[in-house]
Image (tube, rainbow, N blue to C red; front, side, top):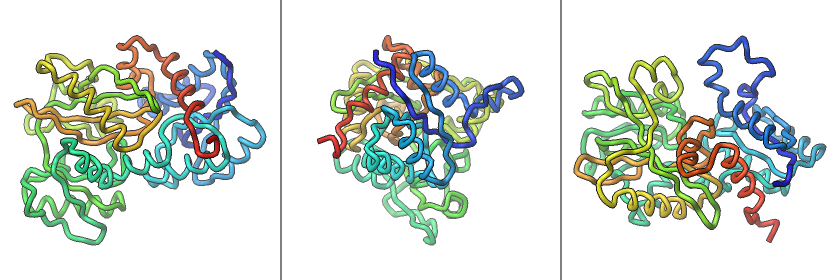
Length: 341
């Protein structure tokens, strides 16, 4: 394995301090991905150049000019606070002719725009809940072809931003209120889809032209209060105390119906290719009690914390965390960008 100069791109507020002794568990949780990747790349022998970014692209150009990294390891999930702008940062890396890890600009744009992604999945006849988009400034009125309960979320934000138990609505009044909430807080269009009750499954995919699909994972809620739906809200994702209260666990999926795992793997591959993704991604599914499978969404460049879904499922497939990060770097270096052709 060749040692590389790796420019590690992350959000400015998530750059791990040299001394973390004064941080509590919740604070450590917020920077866990950045800390795990930084430390592991260093242990692999790479020269790691951490770069925290806020709302300027100039530091990227300066770092590439002065340090001449072999690859940029991209941990950004938004830019200027806009979830879909991460594709522009990757486009900028391509313009600077700097190889990078993770998804290409087109795949990021397709997958992170949930309306576009749903349209592409529907065109490819990949099962996904029926949906409608409600643009900024329009009222949240139920489309005639959709049936309650409905699930309301931002058409562009990810990391469960804006998702709570109130995202599931059962009548016109609640729908209008939730759509207005998304419009005003996320400042994006809203997407409304039929809520699918069932098991929450995830599948991690890694690769460019040749892709690997890791074992199916499941999000479990062992202490879910009565009247609460098992959904990955923002609080479930980021609040450690709340995770403990609900008994949240990410574990290998067990007792799947015969042949379903193979169907999930095939579907994950189809989603990955339909959205033009490269690098690595996580595909989220819902499995109903009667065995129907629906794709909820695709997440390019998901969390790379050592104890999150992608890393744990990779380990179950025999790819330990350091080897996973090295594979992601190799995929970035091998991705055929236009300027290399």
